[in-house]
Image 1 (tube, protein in one colour):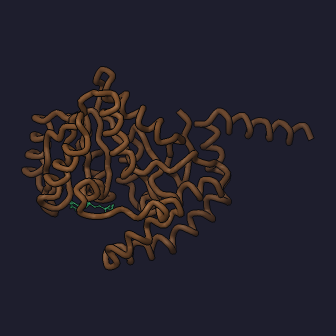
Image 2 (cartoon, protein in one colour; image 1 turned 90 degrees about the horizontal axis):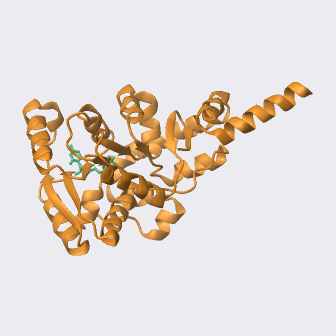
Image 3 (cartoon, protein in one colour; image 1 turned 60 degrees about the horizontal axis):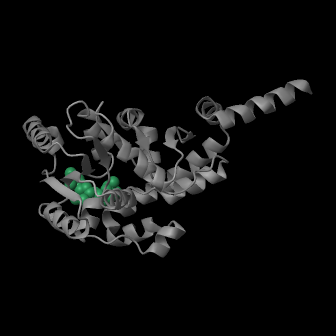
Length: 279
Ligand code: UDP
């Protein structure tokens, strides 16, 4: 599997269709362990620098997809281009489409979003995808992750439903940390940390228009929807991200790590070294 190293995060270099295939294989193949997907964007990249717990959650993920267009631009600027953006908000409907196309039932558990939103998302899913069955919906209260009783209740509900896919929409980094902390006990084939996807499926929130997604300015749309919460976050990211970019551009270490994971880069690094020693 080809990966690149970006701001310390190991990101899978693949297209949307390959990501769908990968998750589908976890569901179809004999069960080994629950696998999960993380969906880095620019904000994750900044959080990743400061939080060891998020780095640990990333280290155990089975798939890391580049959710944000700015990460794709950064990968190109740093000459380790990712093929395309694979947004979590697109991956979920693509997995549902895939189940319908194959006529194979896909069971899904929705964890997160405000009370009532999960049920509306379940209705919308039932209307749009014939082969996708929502087998559980939970909207835990704020602070639930600090309550052992609530955690046990949720894990039991998931175990009883035993879904193929657990969609965890709690926002970052809460969703990644929750999945990671309970990965041994989550009875699902696969889990995805997917931010506001449950809201999108329910029609509670609208995604940015496609032209904004294509231009890589989906974040502008998000700020306009939640200026108070997101304005501060993006201002901080706008200050930190150029620093990360510069550090990465001038760091040889990142290139060497790539060489360890990517045979093509290893070959190019070795070729350059041998040309230098020949001179
Ligand atoms: N959310 C939740 N419980 C929490 C915090 C957030 O269910 O304790 C939900 C919230 O209702 C929304 C989603 O998590 O559906 C956050 O999505 P968003 O994409 O805004 O996340 P972020 O950008 O913060 O990662």
